[in-house]
Amino acid sequence: MMSRLGETQTVTLTGALIGLLFGFFAHRSRFCLRSAAIEFSRGTREGKLTVWLFAFATAVLLTQGFILAGWLDVTDARQLAQRGSLSGAAIGGAMFGAGMILARGCSSRLLVLAAQGNLRALLSGLVFAVTAQAALTGVLSPLRTEVAGWWTVEGGSARDLIALTGIGHGGGAVFGALWLIAALVWAQRQGVKFWGWFGAVGVGAMVATAWLLTYLESRQAFDTVVPIQALSFTGPSADVLMLVLSPPGQPLKFDLGLVPGVFLGSFLSALLWRELKLEGFQGGQSMRRYIAGAMLMGFGGMLAGGCAVGAGVSGAAVFTITSWVTLAAIWIAASLTDWWVDRRAEAPVAAPGEPGYVSP
Image (cartoon, rainbow, N blue to C red):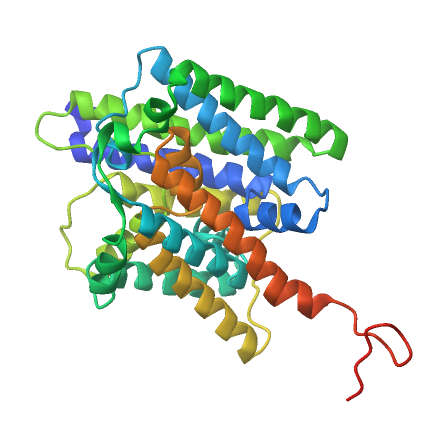
């Protein structure tokens, strides 16, 4: 393909095809870290946490399996090779977690929902992309650089949890397998439907496949530097925004195929299952909430170096310490924000004479 289409075209097409399948599987499974975090914090058993766990465990198991088989080497991937920021991971992850509760979806979920006609998600996604670009090279870039520099960690083994813990890639694969077995047990108990678990497995498989194919293409390319990467939506969303706003002729890359591919895959899923539906805002207060959430996610995701998928699944699958810190911060902040913003608002108001009643 590289000899016929060209190196950059092949890499971009790879991103588009993986994105299309990811979008289709994510839409069918209702894959969403926000929903999983809310279910976990509220102690409910609706299967949303199980769906997320299927995707997470599959990505970890397959990625570590590819490494064990000698097909994949991620030592040169940005998440491991370059200096990382633990302060950025913790603070950025917390901002992202709070933002996805306010915006009612993480960055990938907003893209999926926008494809089926959700105008709230479309606007939030645009605000997210603008904020991410501002944090990368714009007016917010100095603040991001300052916070990221508070606590850094060297690249290489210092960022590699496999090396730090000594479990080896075999231990990493076992870790993924155990969680996959747990997801299977919970799915049976909770009655998770076929597309719930199968689509989630597809989501995780696309993450591992992205790692594998970008590595193989990096080995085959001669004229182009192809980074080894998996799926993320903070940087790619900003890249697509700049592609639209910049003059024609911008260089192609994996990320520029990924975002349109996810949108198309989600749209096709919604079209085939007749789920296309225009949905808007319900008042100005709701709009302010979505915009604030999108801005928190845009800056937080760029500060942390990954989003709910980029750090929470792709980075976690290669056991980079900053990604695990980001994932933990997302979960904690999402749970606290849900409790503070939504659960308190949903709590029933005590009537006169009942415990907890406060006289006006």
